[in-house]
Image (tube, rainbow, N blue to C red; front, side, top):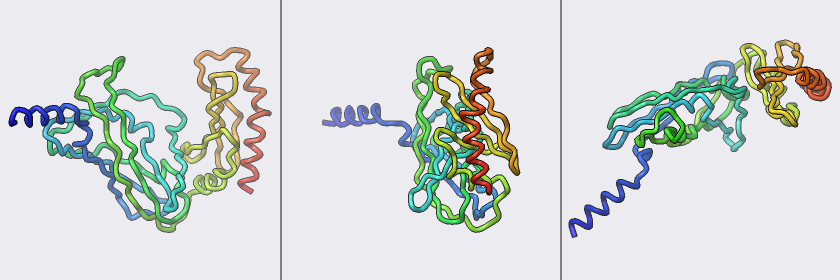
Length: 248
């Protein structure tokens, strides 16, 4: 009977997800107010009996979400929406160890433009180390999601860029995204029909809209120049109209 019990215990451990031993949580560095940074820290503790190893490169790809108290998603407006390449970045935690994996400014990454109650969550990271990646060791685990973190945002003064963002988000034409870019904003349309290109337009306060640029190709051709000229009318003109109406 003892042998059977021992076998079952070993079988259970062999099939257990090692990520279950990783305690992940968000910590607010508040109090928070509009127009001010809103820092959160992402911490992880190894609650298990063996060392855990995981890849945190996905932290550069916005694995966070914010919702209002009534469940509406808050738009993600970090510049990394425009596309960002990353490299593997492994972290190891011994049993009982705690590490701060990330620190973010919610006010910069999300369009938190009104005071009120919000809920933040870390969505987790998949386990890398699969075939074709630099590290294929079997001990690489995923990073589980955190529990929701509720936080309050008090009244304050929005920057000119954020005031413009607040006006422009509801007026954004279909297919376009907008993200913060220094003191201004960048509009991007990721799919141009019939091409692998994306359209990018910069907006500089108070009201300057740049010409549309095509991105996503190392070597431009004359056909690309023709398409870019056509899109100044078919894509940029409606976007410019939406911006002008929203900011009146």
